[in-house]
Image (cartoon, each protein chain N blue to C red):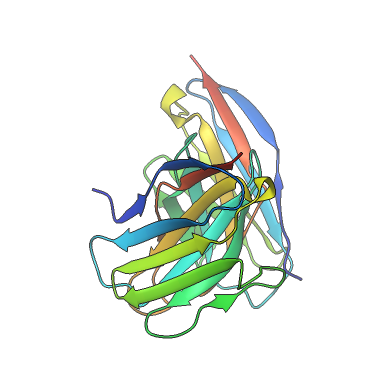
Length: 110
Length: 116
């Protein structure tokens, strides 16, 4: 009930393409779903977050799609850039406690 | 600008010594701070939740006598790894949350701990 499954483990995208990362959770009590970006040797930085009362949230090039019935959510990065190359973590829970996914290493090539 | 300051960023020490890591909230008073551990190329695992003025809440499997947490003020929490051994080598990251539980967590840049 506490797992968050994330896929793919790694992703290679050409510059300008769309990067898509998927996550699935089990606990229906979770009500907060953030995505974090982490560069090597740094802590995670909050990218975007969604709550289950909406199905989509967009901030700039980043969009979260949320499917409550399927207990799945995904991150879409439009017009991917080499500077987006990093590890991305989804998380689920509430703001008292987050369960993190296993991470996706994204590489964007020029 | 940075919301959370974590110090030191890297520490190398001999087996058996104790190491203290500081986490400071720079922009706001944080009644709650979180401590995570991250092994290379792995996810973040919550170790404990630190509440100002009270005892920390540890996750299952985390030894509270091994990982001492002190949250003496609204802007500072410390994690002390006592009698550290090579298996304690890891990346330790803190996060802070502003105000109520409805607010997101902001992470520090982590501390790379290497025990020889």
